[in-house]
Every structure is written in structure tokens, then in C-alpha cells.
Image (cartoon, rainbow, N blue to C red; front, side, top):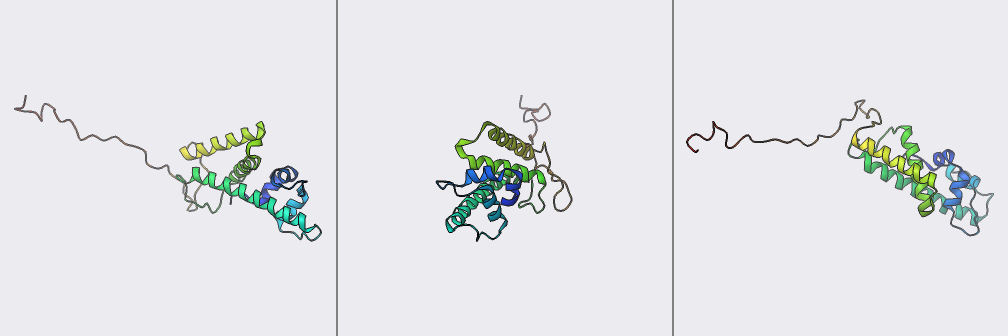
Length: 166
């Protein structure tokens, strides 16, 4: 994964992510609880209902991060050998922006939508070779795949080929 749940919660407001990931009514998961659950901390101080809700919210966060990873891999797959063993930090940021957008679903704010679209544009630039992520595992820069090349067999009716015909 390009970003873990803990990294995601550090990059963005844990409270905001908890609000989006918690489907319980009334809300039972808050930023601190979700952060502790993501870190694997002891949750015995919380009620069993809160622990269950935190587990479900964390599963939603993980699903959004997996969706972000799949989206990123769709763009990187043609240019880089996947999975990347040492991914650049920019992919953590991109994964976070995509996952945040996926968590908001159809209620994304304009700012979150803009960040999502910018992330997709960046990934398209990587896919076309305008932007490179850096060296591959072997230390070599990934080369673009071969492009199309037009080849002709030569002229059929050239002067030298048509003696006695015309």
C-alpha cells in the first residue's frame, strides 16, 4: 500500500476522516479512537460497541486506501514494474487524496474534488512519461514503452520497377 491508515490519519484530520468513515448513528468513532485503532493500540478503555464501530470505520479507511492503490497502479502499470518496493512520498500524498475523495463518495467538497482531479492529472502525466517517479529498483530510469512506427514496403509502381509495363 502506498499509505497506511496511520499515515493517512496523520496527513489529514483524524476527526474529519472518522466522521466520514463512521456509519453509526449516533456517531461512536472520533479521531482519537480511530487513530488508536489504526495504530493497533489497546482499545479496552472503550465500550465493545465503540470498538466494533472503530473496526468498521477502520475497514472503510483501509478499503478507500486499497481503492486508491488500485487507481494508482492502473496508471503506473504501463511504465513501472509493480508492486513498487520503494515508493516515493509523492505517492503517499496522491493515495491520501484519492482515498479521501473515495471516503466522501458523492458528498465531496469542491476542494477535495479539485485535489482528486489534480491527482489523476499527475498520474496521467506519469503514465505518459511527462513526469517520472525516479529510478527503479535496479537504479535505472524507467524507459517509455515503444511507440508506433510506420513502415512501408517501398513503391510498387516506381519507374525502375515498371519497365515494360507502361
